[in-house]
Each structure stands twice: as C-alpha cells, then as structure tokens.
Amino acid sequence: MTNVEELLAAAKMAISDIVKVTYYLTRPTDLPALSEARTRRWKSDAPPAVTTLVVAALARPDLLIEIEVTAAS
Image (tube, rainbow, N blue to C red; front, top):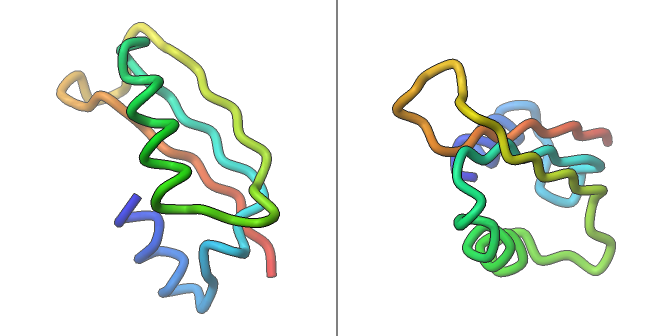
C-alpha cells in the first residue's frame, strides 16, 4: 500500500483519486487481514470498486500479494 501511495503522490494524485483496485492474493487465509488493512488505511466515504482474486502464484514466488490500481483525477 505504501508503494501505491508513493506512486500516486509522484503523479500528484491521492488515495481519493483511486477508482478501481484489484488485489491478487496467493493465500485465501489473508482475505480478512487484507479487508481490515484496506478499510483502516484507505478508508473513504466513496470507496473505489474492488476486486480480489486468489491466485496460485505471482510472477515473483516470494510475493504474497500484488495490488493493481486505477486512478483518475
């Protein structure tokens, strides 16, 4: 989430500019923690569309999550 926030800042955008988030998780047991982290850190009165997918693996096997964000200002 920090990486996403830094990329948005570099583009002169903010969390409120996120319109769609896709999460790719490798462990379904991480779903509750992801939900908690997302609502705590990126709380919004108008939250973006969210898709969460559980996948067998990511391009880098050592990673557990990948976050894809679409933002518009």
